[in-house]
Image (cartoon, rainbow, N blue to C red):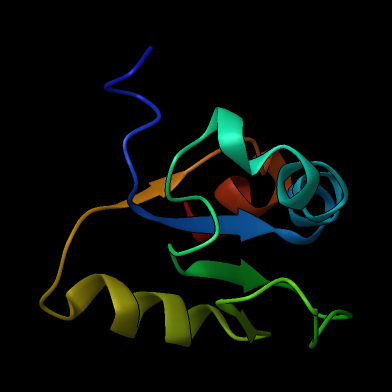
Length: 87
């Protein structure tokens, strides 16, 4: 479990992001680094959050650019609808 919860940037769909946004800022001690990692959010309707390091996009091409860029690992959690869109 510790390996799975190691800090890494995250790609989320709108629904999963909204669930996480309500939960993790209040429970961050359970997941070291969740405040610091970048939360990339693919959404047609959301474009802002007060949760630090949240980056919004409404364009799949932006996710392609992100994937093609150099950098660390980006994990996807939940986000079934977004994952289907990406496939």
